[in-house]
Image (tube, one colour):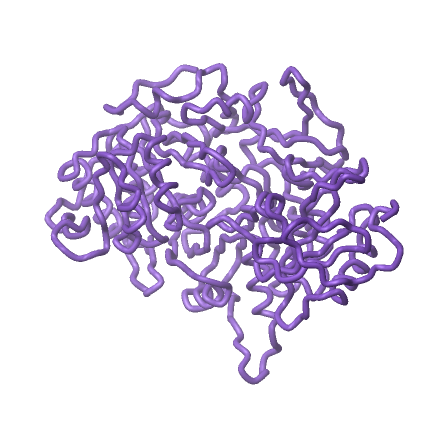
Length: 588
């Protein structure tokens, strides 16, 4: 793979790209995805958008109502870039850690790193010292810009040689104080389109985190594909959402996409569905990005009590015109309930840190409950199987297989042998099991490693979860397999009940009977674990591996098994009866 001459003085990131033969095949078959050899995505998102749409347009809004126009944002970004390359000594190609909750200042720091030709390593504000230390070591991070309120864990990490500049605090060494004497204009470094712009580290919750390397052209490509053709934003839009900028879902949805379209973004941190609903109402948000769990939480508040009920809080979210769901599978029941309640069809999508953003989706009349969608313009997708030699072959429509995708972006791990697992025959293998229907729509089955095999039957946990979520007493559900000597695995449902519903044998029996009416009996849960919450990553993704590893020990209040079903350690039985039947029709 031929790369353009780099503008980087520090070539660490490019030097540690996978060998060319391990790259996915890149697809640039649309004119809007063919970029010039020299390109700085920060200048394109900010300077070019200011010129194209007007420097006086709103660009970034804080939850306190503070608003920066494109011209004001550019002045702040350029001052930070001057501090980076002057006071702090950042050279093109140096890795700069960005840490803090979503805020206008964090967004300005990210753009400044781009314009300075450095490499952004944006992490979550919730990450702890040992996680930060590992990321800094893997990425050879030399500098950090950190929200003053998020300094403690970074200081605990004690990264050798790391130069940290806090922002939003007090004192003359604060980044914002250093910016006051700097010029308002900074000429962006003339980076190559294939110079590294960012390294996005996966969460690493199940092992060593992987650094996903993305170029300057990649940042624009996700906007010029999914955002342009599926989301279709307008300059008058106001974006908002819950995903952090340290998560590529949030970086795209709350910064890259609005700026590319000349729109505005509302950046803040909202805890819980009420705060998010209130922000939508107060600021008149038009485009919302969040995960299915958050949509379910908002639905519970929107439908909690009819208007006029004493003490009820109603929310005016009529400003919304686009609602994007990603990060985990969107159950059909959630899609249908949101449409019934708001009149809006959610834009479902699947993306990956390795691919930067969404590559299969659908919107408006093309959106369908229970389906993720079709390949985003600029991408190709197929369902395949992989043989022992690592060769891929297509799977017929209607049969499950691995989702494979390729397009203008692709997986490039930073010096990681797992590159060979993700990229095969030029395709990116996402690790998801999908079915492609005769209509061309891709429907999610499960994560490839989340399939439950019980008595020879393949059972997709998300399908069982969707059935449970149709029951009015269920707020959240996670379904995993538990080892079983007789069946190999048995289906266990971890359930968060709606407020006021009693956890016990009667509720378990009711849910078991309900799912038996929804699914083939062998798919129905043999055990129910009632919990106050489900384990999730800081980005909201369900951690099924936690439930598999420790059973009901984390957060469980009660566990109810069918008669004869063996309980695993740490599980408290509360009796319960389901008659003589078993979920799969085999002897209990």
